[in-house]
Amino acid sequence: MAVQSWIDQLKASKKTAIISDGKRKVHYLFNDGKEMAEEYDMKTDELICRKWRTKTTLGGHGAWQVEVGDPQPLPLPGEQDTIRESSSNPVFMRKDTKNSFQWRVRNLSYPKEVYSLTIEAAERSCIIRTSNKKYYKKFTIPDLDRCHLPLEDSALSYTHANNTLIISYKKPKEIQSLEQELMRELKKLKGSNEGDIDCKTQ
Image (tube, rainbow, N blue to C red; front, side):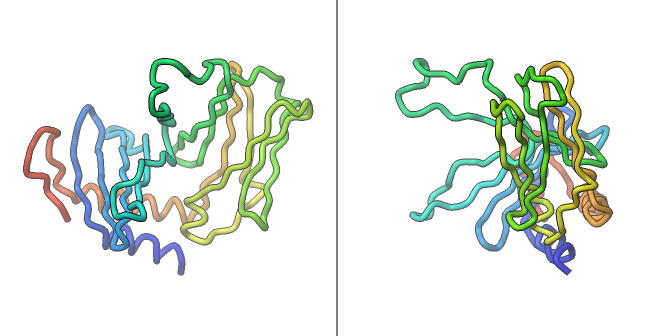
């Protein structure tokens, strides 16, 4: 089963845990060289951030790609202080809850009835459209892809408030079980405090 295959990969990876600022920070190194870094709230166990890094063709470290949490736009060389993205542009980010995958698109002032959400099953993606053709976004749910789980129309919903479109996708029971099992594993790790040199690994 694909879900079990993914949890087995997580268990087999080399993991390092650090406790800092009320967060459990976990670094995973997979057998294929890929790296994943996650941050969890220590009180709620909710995922705050997840990012991935793969090796470049020359064997060096590539840039981190954010999957969950605030996006981290990198300035182009030589343009650090000259060109910046307008703060009024729509900002798309993922911020999950315990029971749902959730995405927020900030700086969208159109009323709720302007938006429509559809699932493209063949492409395994979700699409946001506006009837005024002012915004379009296609996105995937990597968690479902990794576990080869289908996209369900009935799991998708959205609301709009404070110039922010909030899209929710109810986590399938398989994902919730996987996350609970993973958290039990992570809590077994002996996390060192940030600044300690000897990080415990599993």
